[in-house]
Image (tube, rainbow, N blue to C red):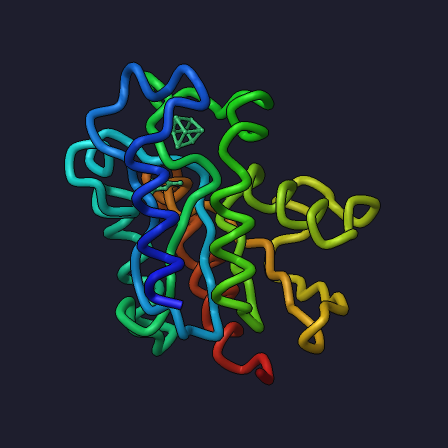
Length: 192
Ligand code: URA
Ligand code: SF4
């Protein structure tokens, strides 16, 4: 399994499948424990991640670290990935065609990790994952469905999908931290 992960990382490092390859400094394939039962999926690398190649290492990452700590989750024990592996210039939203070009890598990561729980950080991640797992007709904006647990059958049993606000919202609106803390604190009580 380690080998298969390294293979994905190698392909991502060499990937030229969308125009973001031309402007990235580093790819950000994902990081953490590949045997984790919980997988967090963000949107795309920002400036700090583009510089280091590591997911959630900038301001949003600080917020995420605090949320994980308060929820009793260790960053080393979980896996964190993103919909896009390269930074959109100026942190603009991902384009549909970029998501289409890149999502095969995330799909393979999900297939290998076989998480019991997926924490979707923000609207793009929520939409992609809910569609992927046949929950398209129940997907709504994050303000409507954050903190809900959507259970869906998969070959190894079932998977629980939890839409969460993106940690970056706290950098725009500090009051949002309490909403995020409440949602994150519930994650460790979800039965595996
Ligand atoms: N925001 C994201 O969605 N992902 C990162 O890795 C960093 C910031
Ligand atoms: Fe390839 Fe994804 Fe990077 Fe586009 S964003 S170049 S598809 S790794």
